[in-house]
Amino acid sequence: MQVPKYTAVVADDHKLLRAGFMQILSSLSEIEIVAEATDGLATIVAAKKYKPDLLTLDIAMPHAQGISVVTEVQRWSPGTRIVIFTGITSANLLNEMVHAGVHGIFTKRGDITEFEEAIPTILRGGTVLSSDARTITVNADVELTLTKRERQILSQICAGHSTKQIAETFSISVKTVENHRASLMAKLNVRSLAELLAYAVREGLLNPQRHL
Image (cartoon, rainbow, N blue to C red; front, top):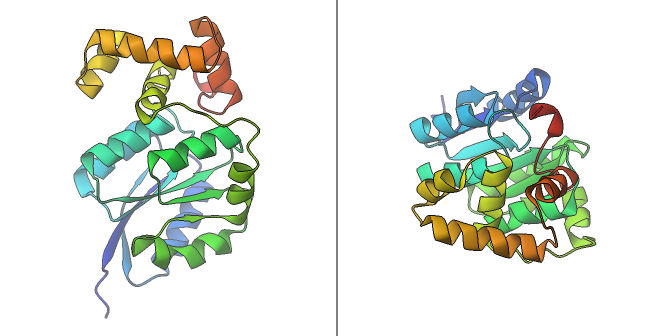
């Protein structure tokens, strides 16, 4: 019997999709699934506890989502290969994930066989975008010029965190957070928190139904 070489965590708040990903990974003798998660916070906890080789991640889950989950997973388990699965097709959001350093992006409307075929490449250090994800990112109407830190702070603001909380999260000063916030608002041409949140909803960074 072959001993698994890799460990994996599956994170998705939809039971059927989670079961589907687990079935695919379980069919590979070299992968052992060590945990599943149904929300962003549980995903971060699982990554910190198990430090898996692979994480399949839905970026629109309750409690924590998007770049904030990716950032925390990278913080606690830098060796984890992160693969994004999303139903959101915002070019800016997918480009944000690319800039954040994820190792795979697949849309939920795409062909799942692309993911199956990409698993060995991803586990061995490669980065793979599905054909439809590549099309979306290449044909982006707007090229975001936000820095990685500005993207992180935008995600934290969308999650409802205060300036002080954001400063503590990234071990920076309150003044630095304020400067980043002013910079990203200028780049996005928004003048208020309401406009910033509206932008986040439009680009798939914030699910309004989960924040009512």
